[in-house]
Image (cartoon, rainbow, N blue to C red; front, side, top):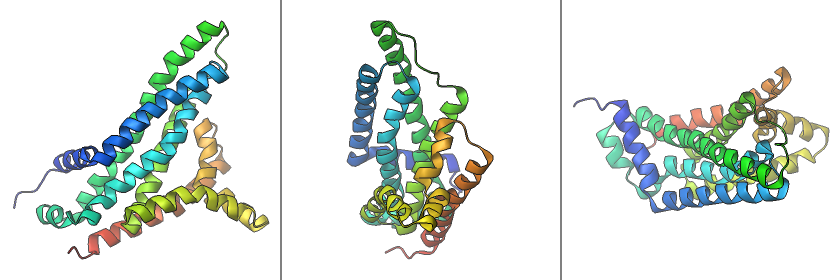
Amino acid sequence: MTDIPFHRLLRVETRKLFDTRSAKIMILVLAGLTVAAIVARGVVAGPRPRMLAGTAGVGFGTLLPALGILAVTGEWGHRTALTTFALEPRRHRVLAAKCLPPLLTAVAASLFALLVTVPVTIVVARVEDVPVDGGFGPLAVLGWTATNVLLVAMGLAIGMLLLNAPLSIVLYLSTPALGTFVGRLGGAGELLVRWFDLNTTVGPLAKGDLSGADAARLAASITFWIVAPMTAGFARGIRREVT
């Protein structure tokens, strides 16, 4: 049997990601919400590019991870994994190809939001005849984009571990509330949130001012929410019986 090149697997999984009706609806809704949110925030808050881009990040943090979850759980739910793994028995290559398109989509979505933010900022500044309030430097842009990618990676890891789309989406969307609940349990709860709540530890990264201590806490939360469940999920996906 001829080896299937990885780039072909990647192309196939990318097509699967965007060919479904739910994915198309999500992308259209996300694009529309991004433009509407940035324009509306610009009118209300003025020409503040960092804030305008951050407004788009609210939708990214919800819909993009859900898209990633659907990418890694869809075939198990529709029972088409049997055909996929029959064509490419080396499951780790298929699973890796499923994870990359959502991560690249997060990067593309971030660039789209920035492309919308720039003209909106310029137009609002000219219409209101005020200077642009604060910049959005390269470090801040990279940190904000990396934050979007990490949140998608978190969704992928949860989906890979559970292999169940509804349960994975509910768990992912519940993590902010879970962090708030744990943080109210006293000193120990606050310590856990500072070190293991990814929604909290990505804050300095998104602002582009990550210190050494911030990086350590971010690494701990990435290990807890991404590395560990992704590793366990890969092992489960490779060994799980397909029926």
